[in-house]
Image (cartoon, rainbow, N blue to C red; front, side):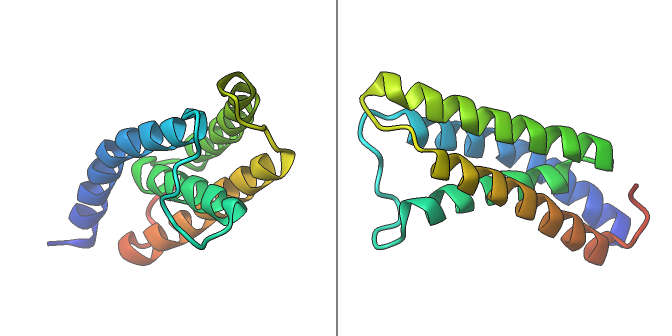
Length: 125
């Protein structure tokens, strides 16, 4: 399998995996009782990890920097909206959760972009 074929396969797989991952994050943020999916790990680290993973998948799925930037901005806005909506589910919205979401999205996109460059070479824009 060539590097380009690996890049194409990983982009397709990332696109498919992004949507259920996004649904899981939305559910986790809006469930009336916060799910404890990573016992012993701080809430902020869980937020960071969720958005890092989403941005990593977006980086693998999207071909251009502009599209990835738009995805990161959308993830940050979504994270903020979900934090606000948590107030309607009986949970407490927290600005530090949104900070963790935003930081995770930014670092995940950066890491994903670097990983793609390593696997596929610098051919992607």
